[in-house]
Every structure is written in structure tokens, then in C-alpha cells.
Amino acid sequence: MPTSLETMISAIQPINLDAVQAASDHLDQLTKPPGSLGKLEEIAKQLAGITGITVPKIGKKAVIVMAADHGVCEEGISAFPSEVTQQMVLNFCSGGAAVNVLARHANADVVCVDIGVNAPLEHPLLYSRKVRFGTANMAKGPAMTEQEAHQAIQVGIQLVEELAAQGYTLFATGEMGIGNTTASSAILAVLTEEEIKHTVGRGTGIDDERLQHKQAVIARAIELNQPDKDNALDVLAKLGGLEIAGLTGVILGAALHRCPIVIDGFISSAAALVASRIAPLSVSYMIASHQSQEKGHERLLKAIGLSPMLHMDMRLGEGTGAVLAFPIIEAALKIMMEMATFASAGVSQTDNQTDS
Image (tube, rainbow, N blue to C red; front, top):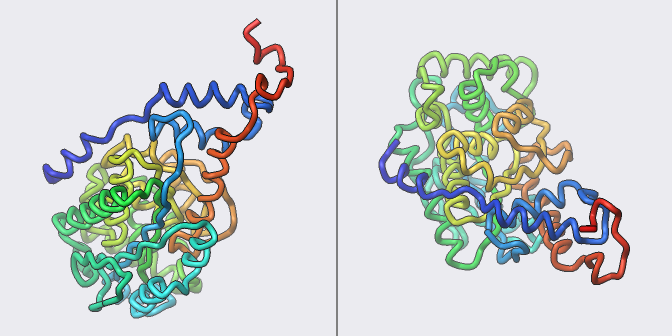
């Protein structure tokens, strides 16, 4: 692992347990039975620990959509052609994609990043951070070099730093890249030592024949590249994608800046798994938004140690599930800020809530 990345990882701090306890104490004084708001209370306590503030406030919100192409698409593993990646990037920038609609609903901004699209792209709203024009075909060799993977991670870290300086305090992961369920499935298979048949889903909606072909391509890529399961950066470089590496950096960057990071679906969770192996402390800063329909997502979340708040049968990606979770996270903080305590409302507590 490059020294600069090691330095950044060493700067990630554990969440503030005193703030967690203070938030827990405050929640127990609110006019409700203890723990009765379930995950809302857990989110409130986690946010307190992340920020070090008992009742933190949310500033600006952003979903960071990393976009890149995958050389493995040469193997015919997707129902859509690679050109869709660049077309969708322009759709994001024009505000016409599903994530744009849901972000507007949540009063959040979409930050679209070209980190590895296999075409020259220009748009006033596009963040151009291209590391290279798409990955190589992992079925024929490493998807990228370790240096390129490291550079892509740095892009994500630096972008969070830039946005945090602009007042953004709540982030979500999003992605676009035809072929990226193949890369994510390969990462999951190696890092968790799961059988490939349990990690590979239908992605963009492939049929049974192409699904079997996709599994075979992943098996061939793993056999050819021999990634080190104990070295997440090696696995990421040999089997991953530039957008997955970029999101790994976004997650690490959020942890560095003590900001909550909302994890979207299968591809985002593959990045979260890599981040968790590189920097275990980063897991405490992650909030799982939903469980995707994509096969293997439940295994990914369990491997990280995350529990999703939503089950919406979604499998679009883009950050759509993560953005849907923004209002729930804000609701958890409104409970902390606006709900009356037993004392202020003059409501009697149960015996196990009183000091006497």
C-alpha cells in the first residue's frame, strides 16, 4: 500500500463513544419507550459518534456518482453496450436520471465524476478526474495497475475534502459503469472466499445463458490474475473498476473528515468492502441504505457488518437507494432536536427510566 494512502488511513479516528452515550441518554429522556424508534435511534447515535456532537446538524448533501468503463465488457457479460456509460454520464449532468429526480426530492446535489469513462467527455457540471480511459479486460490480465487503483482512491478522498470545504456534511455513494456488477462480483468472491455462483447476479438483466458465461469469465479472471485475498488493494487493481476504486476513496475520505457516508447498492458495497479491509475504522462511518435485488448484495453487507434500512427491490444503482435514505437520516436528527423530553412535557416515566 503506497505510503501516502497509509498516512491517510492512519489519520482515520474511531467514532466518539462519549457522544454516542450522550445521544443514547438524550433519546431515553424523550417521550417514548426506550428504543421504540428502532433504527432511527441507532442512526442518531451513530451520527453523534461520527461528528462528536450529541445533536449534530446536517449541512449540504451530495451523492457522488463515479463513472467508468470496464474492459471486461469485451467478453459479452452485459445486456447493454459500453457506450451507455458515457450516455448516462451526460444524462446525470443534464438532470434526467433517476438519481437526479430522487436527489431533487431529498434536496441533495448530484456530483458526477468521470474517473474512467472510455471517451472524452465535457460538460459544465461534470467533474473530470479521469485516471485512464476505462480498465483493461480483467479476463486477459489485470484491470489496472496498483498505482492506477491508488490514484483513483486518491481522487475520491480529495473530492470529499473539496466538497467538505464547501459545506457538505452528508455523502452518498453512486456509480455508473456498464460491466461493474462483474467486477463487483469478482471482488466479493475473492475477499469473502464465496463460491462464484453465490456472488454473480443478472446485473442489467441478462438471461440464463449469459449469466453462466459471466460466471465463467469471472472464474477465468480470478485464475489468471491470482489476486491476493489478504490484500484488498491488489484485488481491487486486478479485478475492480476505476469507479469502484473512486468510491473506496470517497468512503475513506468521509471517514477522514468525520462525515457519514451512505452506501448504495451492490457496486457501492463492493467499494465499501474494499474500504473496510483497507481501513477497518471506516465501517463506523458507513450507513447502509438498502438491500439490492442483485445476488450477492446481502453477502456483501454481512461481510462488511452493515444492516440495510430499506428493502425496496431496487437494482438500478446510481446512488438511488442511498439518496432515498437521506430523509430518514434527517428524520433521526429531527427526533433528537424537536421531540419533547418527559420533563419538558410533564409526562410520567416508567420505573426503569427514572433515577428513583
